[in-house]
Image (cartoon, rainbow, N blue to C red; front, side, top):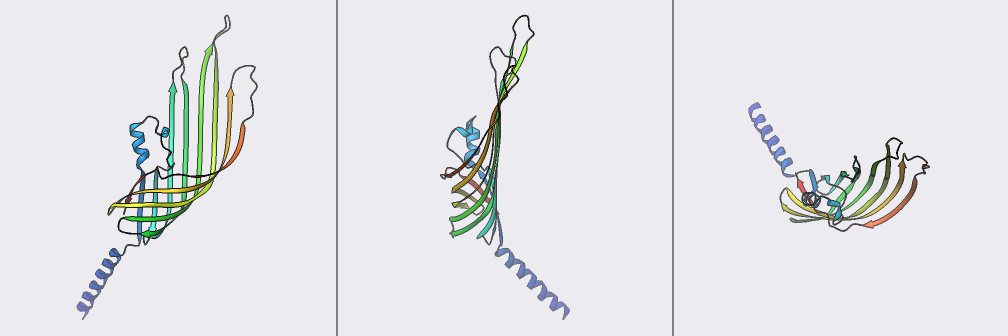
Length: 227
């Protein structure tokens, strides 16, 4: 009797596990900005062509492939040097940016090949650029003097976005995805110039706050892995 009960228990557990596997509750998605990757491969300045969404990679977590949470991240770090004739040090330029988004998504149309989703996110951006020019001069019989001129710009932004996206399933675990968001953003900017030249009076920073609304066209194509 115990042996028969054990067999029934084994069959029940095996059937339950098989049912769980066949009705997957959680779906993971990882997307990569394929256009940005291609532009970086073929261009030294990938920001010079079509505007892209600032998120290089995203992660979605769906429940029953219907409603889910999503995050996105984009980071850039650019450094360049330009040699100036007659100067020992080059002119330098540094640019950094950080873009984050976090929100929810809902698949309102699903078929074998095409999925349409609506989404809403909170977004955050941080941007900074700095240009430094170092020069030397000498007026006989005075010693050589070194002057440094630095211009800088900083932007902090916070806001939200909402829109729709379309996903085309190539194979079971591979899709391509594009979306059209309406972005609402408030940016606080700080810019200024600093120098160590004698007789130059330091000027206060220029500060401003800007609110903007924009629609970003679906020029960003993401390659999405689903598992």
